[in-house]
Image (cartoon, rainbow, N blue to C red; front, side, top):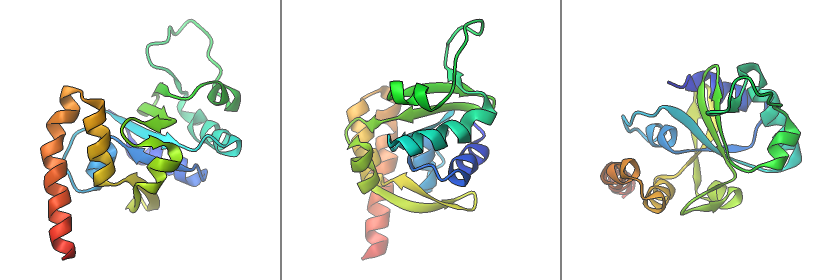
Amino acid sequence: MIKTTEAIRALARNEVVFVVVGGMAIRGHGSSYLTQDLDICYSRERANLRRIATALAPFKPRPRGFPENLPFVWDEQTLQNGANFTLETTIGDIDLLAEVSGVGTFEQVLAESVSITLYDYEVKVLSIAGLIKAKRAAGRTKDLLVLPELEALKEAISESEE
């Protein structure tokens, strides 16, 4: 299970430019959805890659399923050479995504995000409408099962704004 408090705080303290997507974003909108990892979509600007490398380094990130006896270098260059990373860390699994299916690039994800306070930091979180698009595009059973709750949350928010 991910220790989201530590992960979010480390990213925010290091001024990483990111948007929380996936299960933690669903929880951020008031759902009781359980998630085993933290999914973020992140800016690919070089300075941001440096900040991500610094923020996560204390948690010893490694690619999930990567043999322990093989060396792995966690740094800005590693991030520059890839786009999507499924990492295991000492605080749980963290997925870094350069884009989100159904929504698009980081810039498009950012445009579909809202600000929410998580663990004393103002954090960008994918909107409910964005989550619905992403879950539909992913099409996995676990994603499709959460759609009715997301639709209900979207409707409840719309009604409260009227």
